[in-house]
Image 1 (cartoon, rainbow, N blue to C red):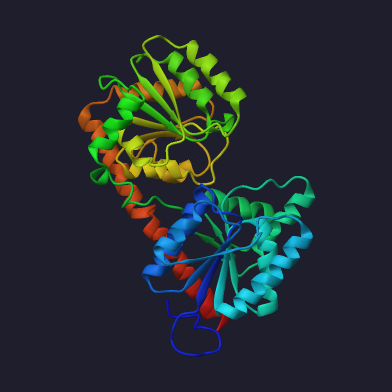
Image 2: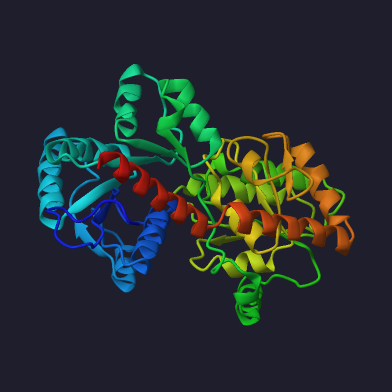
Length: 390
């Protein structure tokens, strides 16, 4: 990174990059923030992360990035105005060259702080925010008022262009990615896989189908359970990995559906598992049957990076990460019968045919959807914006 010198013109050290997000709880936005901070540190580019805090803040200290706690998660207009003043002071004191914001509430504060300090800023559009009523659409529009808006998929890029009439050259398409160092089947100890099988009493002789995602109706657990009742293959183990986040009613609903399955099909509700790579490693098939389009769908590329066949609903970002029949499989959204047919087809494939699809998915992630590529493209965008502002 050569553009964007430290403010004041002293020396050749690149200016500081500031990332701003509401909090550092567990989630894809938070992980992307830390992954970018790690890359910036590796390149000796000073960087700061501003959030209201959370358990993932500790990870920043381990990689050499600084975390500053401010109540930027707040939607209170008074607090947002105060945050703008605090951010402006930080920008001046730390010689910040560019601000990267990842959510709407802090984007309002960033907008004003950057206007007062004449600092360029960009925003990442991580999801499809609702556009009704009109006030919500106006609120969302702040994400488009920096020098660039980053879309995490072409699906999101098209949504931004369609709903907000944003010029194409203002939208930067930077797909999210999988950490191919973490999600590498060669790096997962077999003892971790065996420990999971023992913990959840998973028999080794049955194919294992895994769904990773919080226990919520939108994640499609019910679609998979309905598909299981229609499948020719009955001797299966199904592992649902994800917390119900207090939605105990939905958990009870799932348990009632599980009782209707053939006795040869075992379903385990594992709850949240922090170390997810061994989960993918034990799977024969990973299913992502979300009934609401995912902006990107990071679990898909993580499972592909682990050399696993993925089946996903045919909408949203999944259409960009799965080439149907070549790097994975797609099925019509919510169609349990179609999902049953796809799963039966996969389980009936020869070892060689399965291996071909698994390897194609793995190559796809390494070539196009890695964290490394995501971070490099983001830093390239910083350079482009800073060069324009010189």
